[in-house]
Structures are given as C-alpha cells and as structure tokens.
Image (cartoon, rainbow, N blue to C red; front, side, top):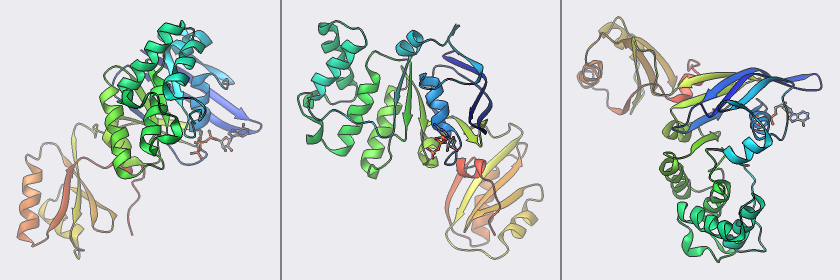
Length: 300
Ligand SMILES: Nc1ncnc2c1ncn2[C@@H]1O[C@H](COP(=O)(O)OP(=O)(O)OP(=O)(O)O)[C@@H](O)[C@H]1O
C-alpha cells in the first residue's frame, strides 16, 4: 500500500471542505481525481503533500504515519501553474533541485540527466526553458517532479492549455512511466482520464467516491451507442426488440444501454438491429463513458 487515508476532515472556518475522506492507493496504473470547481481537490492534494494538515483523520505512507521525511522520499507534486526558472538551463536547475533533496553535487547531476532522459529531453538539457516549446516545457516540469525517484506523483491538470498533439504526448509519457511510478491525475478532461486511468475518485462537496472505469457491475453489460442521425422512437423500438434492456438517452444521438450479462453477444444482436432498421451508427463502445457514469442525467 502506497498511501492510506482514513476519515480525513478539513474545515476552513465554518466551511466543511473534506468530509470523512478515506481511500487507499496501491502502486500501479494511474489514478484520477475529478470533481467540480470548489469540490476540495486542491485541499486534498495539499494535505497529501503536507502543505496543509487535516483537522482529523490519519494518513499513512506504507506502514508509517506520514511525516515530512516520508513525503519527501515518496511523493512529488506538480501544480497546474508550475514554472521553470528562466535564469538557468534545465540541467542546471534540475541538478540544483537534486542537491536541495540532499544529493551530492555529482549524484544530483546524474539525477538531472536521468529525469531528462525519462521525458526524452536529454538533447536540450543545456537549453533555457523559454527557448522550449510549450509541450517540451510541460515535459520538463514533469521531469522536475521525478527528481529523487518518488513512488507517487500528483499531477494537477497536466495537459491543460496544450494543443491536442502535445496533450497526447503527455498522456503517452504518463502511460509509459506508469510501470514504475504511480500517478494521481486531476483534470477536468474526463475523456483524457478515462483513457489513462482505471480508478477514478470523484470528489463532490467534500465527499469522495470511487468509480472503476472498467468495472460496470459484473452481472450487467453496458454499451454506449452514438447514432449518425436522430432516430424517432429509438428507445421504444430497442425496448421492443430487447425487452430486458434499459436504454437511456444521454446526449443528442447518444444512448447508454444496459442488459443482463446472460444475454450472449448482445453487441452483435444490436448491430443487426441497427442494420435491419436502417439506423447507421457512429460508434458502439463497450461500457459507459466516465461522463455518463458520473453524471448519468437523462437527456431531454
Ligand atoms: N485557504 C482557504 N481559506 C478558505 N477557504 C478555502 C481555502 N482554500 C480553499 N478554500 C475553499 O475550500 C473549497 C475547496 O477548494 P479547493 O481549492 O480545494 O477546490 P478544488 O476542487 O481544487 O477547486 P478547483 O477545481 O476550482 O481548483 C472552496 O470552497 C474554497 O473556496
């Protein structure tokens, strides 16, 4: 177990910002933290990092109570607005940060090169941050968070403000590093988190709940269907053909369909149904989108 949080509470004055928040994190694939503005995500990150303390509850790293030394060794955080120092080359500033973590000058230089290689920036190690592209600067910021070889890295909005190509590069980088490092990602981009993370924690008004993006209930199958065109009475037609299914319109031309797992090859039957009714489809996905799991309001 990397981290275990038990019944964390935090108030700011009369405002109860975290309410009995408990979770545990094992080493492994990236974990997402999502929630609306003001839900308490930054407060929770700040407590994990030790910038704030909880009013009650406990936090353990492995078997030990969280201490400053334990945090420095195990955990790094990259705030959304993290900046590199424009006065020094990447190599110089990363070597300096390594020394601040207690490494000797020589070990810090090796560590600086190690993290630059991890994010594939070894060739621009002598460059100043302002001479790099936006995407490269973001990779450099991630490299900075990897100094000291933390087991757990918190990334706040890692791809915010990046164009789709650079955002994809960052996603690939996080995925490629995830064998050795456990990332907790906070983002407003649900489709990004869905691609990267199997476990999604949802924080709303200080209450934390866990979603498993691959884990729709074992006895039910879920599908998300996007039609090419609007179809009149689609829900009733489908219900007639598959009386045990539950169909919900989630967006214009998008539906989630739920059916018992005993129904064999439901996807094949559904495609046949669409073909027979001359209903071209845009996409059929196994499972519900994260957005539909979190906000499963019916579309009207
Ligand atoms: N230092 C503080 N003093 C008083 N209230 C605070 C303080 N920090 C945060 N809050 C309040 O606590 C609540 C949670 O804030 P927090 O920044 O943790 O939310 P968040 O989920 O990170 O939001 P966002 O997505 O907008 O960044 C908000 O109502 C905020 O106004």
